Image 1 (tube, one colour):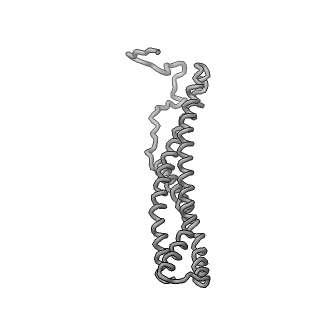
Image 2 (tube, rainbow, N blue to C red):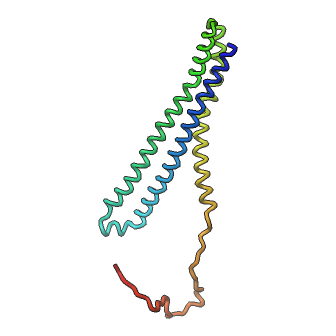
Image 3 (cartoon, one colour):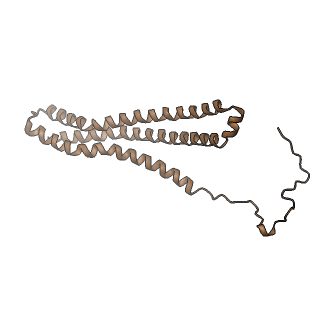
Amino acid sequence: VGYAAFAGFGAMVAILPLNIYAMTLLRTIQEKNMSRKDERVRAVSELLSGIRVLKLFAWEGPASKRVLDLRALEVKALFRFGVLGAAQGVLWSSAPAIVALTIFAVYTSQGNVLTLSVALPVLSLISILQFPLAVLPWMLMSYVGASIATKRLQGLLLAPAIVDTRTRIPADQAEVGGVAVQLKGARVEWG
């Protein structure tokens, strides 16, 4: 096919920036979704830790509404992630067909006749490339997920240590019947 092969290569290179842009958007959506997920988990944790107070004051409705609102934002981001991931997958799945059409169009526009002896080897070579081209987007999406997880773990592992500043009195030094807490000059109010 001669120079028409370079046109097919150009078509593959032309698809790459679209894929990189889609991967960047997928990463942004995934990062936002992870922070929303953290916020929702935090809200559920608060809800569960204060369940007695919630029940006592009948605050179940507002508390569950807050959690459901956070979940709705999370589901919306997941939907966007799914749609964009599907569009990116369709683009990469159609890449072999786009490359073949480009090669054949350039080959025939040069005045050549497309015969089976030319078309079948080209399609065979494109078919060999089809699996790596199909796996590439999934590898990139896995990279996006791994890089986000690595960044989150790095933030956790590199966070400063929490220093316990409580003063502990050994049991053998504690006064039996003595004062446990003493406030001097304190003003204490309720409500």
